[in-house]
Length: 252
Ligand SMILES: Cc1cc2nc3c(=O)[nH]c(=O)nc-3n(C[C@H](O)[C@H](O)[C@H](O)COP(=O)(O)O)c2cc1C
Image 1 (cartoon, rainbow, N blue to C red):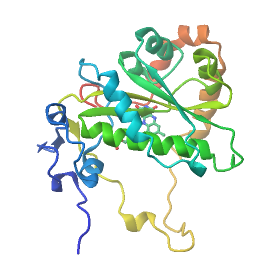
Image 2: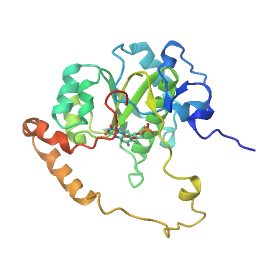
Image 3: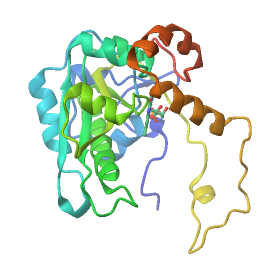
């Protein structure tokens, strides 16, 4: 017997039209009780939002429910830096963050106490990541889309800029806001059989692309963020074309 639906078209919490999901319907009719699988199947990352602001109380409620996410040793050592100051978004953009941040109206940076003995597995990063995932799913059920952003200046720089205690490590920034009308369905790239190995890793079918130049990109990235902010500001327009763009600016 099939336990789960596996494509967005099979769920019935969010309208689908011509291959597009219409999560904006949830703004008028929020559905925090929608089934978990419907939320998972219809949540999509969005980077452009309606101009209407998410009330701070709603944001607080989203944070409260997201605080039920798992954390290493149940330590629950998150800190949430809520951002709604246009000058801060502009500054983050100028310092080389993902370009769409410039247009954001609301976001938060999730910080997590990195004073862990399990630095090998970066417990604090994993704990923060679990939080972001919960946040994005519950926000979605209220018609609020979000984007998890790792394209940011160096952590030390963010800590200085926001006056953050040295034990609180910035893990990611999350922009959020009410969905515009539609989002694209994104098919899964593989089947479970392609990614599950039983008891031992089987790398026989693995193919690695050499075209991505990860090594070179890493070095360029490192050097770029080592430049002082005033230089990055000067270079910002020139650096734009090198940013990866894999989305449609109008709706996602
Ligand atoms: C760790 C992490 C970092 C990400 N960083 C960025 C980012 O810097 N800029 C961006 O536009 N999207 C970023 N994303 C969002 C992904 O691009 C998005 O999740 C992906 O395209 C899949 O889309 P979906 O969330 O709708 O399934 C990030 C997601 C994750 C999990």
